[in-house]
Length: 425
Image (cartoon, rainbow, N blue to C red; front, side, top):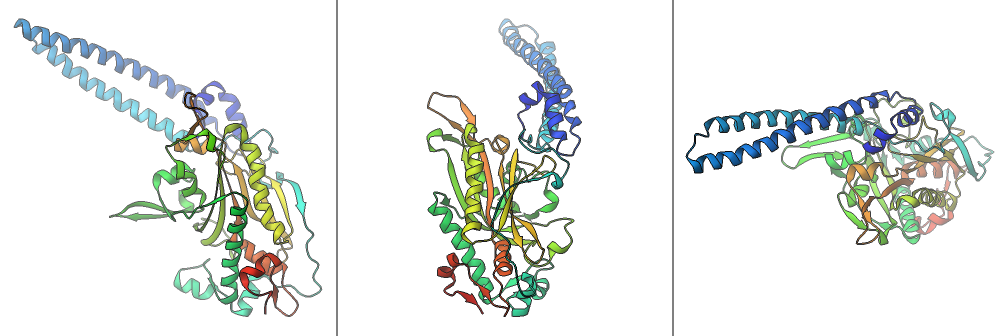
């Protein structure tokens, strides 16, 4: 969440910058009024508590002197009731301020292109040239159905729409891609972590999924074990790894990579992307998460994004890097790059990774801090995350870009050791 002190001191600037996200954040003007009311209640409550303490001393004195203290004791009882009432009002105002802050996104960085939606995004880098085919191409889902290696019909029977059974070589290809990604990232200094796929409400709130994205998530209410959410990305459990901890600044940056299944309700999603592997309710992803010092986070964003790009380059998949506009950047992010891979069946680039610098936005929600030395004050870390990459979309891109006229699929060189073959016949 945003720093309430910064909001108080720069209210109009905050509203102006947030409004470039294509929303109306004038509701933040309520915070000064709530602050004023809060201070008034605290002063009244503190005054009554001081008065009550003085009267409590008089009760003891009266009893020692044999005087009647009943009126003073009644006054103490009355002040207790008034204090309780004031404390309740104070708690309600604190909760209201908290909910306002939880519902408010991160400030977009000033370097972002200003615009209301993705049409204002800017392509900042392109790599590779789309392959020119001399035969009619097929989409990855048509190739999968033709070979019997994808079975969405039986998956719909078992689970519902937008699920898929992978079979045979395509199941192995998915596993090979994930292992290749993890091996590459760990070789480059990331620590592999296997996270829980269910998290509690505090974790879901900490990374910004709640309250904003509750309708896009799967909620599991287990009466005996507790309240859980199925993770939409490994970012959620991995970023919560250090929740409510104070880190030694000497260990920063900490870089994790994690493979997981991801679960998204994708409320309202429709269109062509619901075919094949592009927009599933369950999919696999390799995630990159970084914790760093504030002054390093934008440098770390370039490092993390480059790490994801490395996978695409090693697989020799054409892609482009796009910086998102203020109207398209994610809720938690101050700045975000999308990596978009070329998909021949779309004749277009499709998102395969989002790499975000969330600055101290998540760390403030989760209270993840660090100390530069034993005597220095605590500071909030900065958190970053990105897909390195979405496994299913990578598989789809390989199938489409490496398809041959006879229906076979050539295996990218770097995946041959994982697949044990050079071609899926």
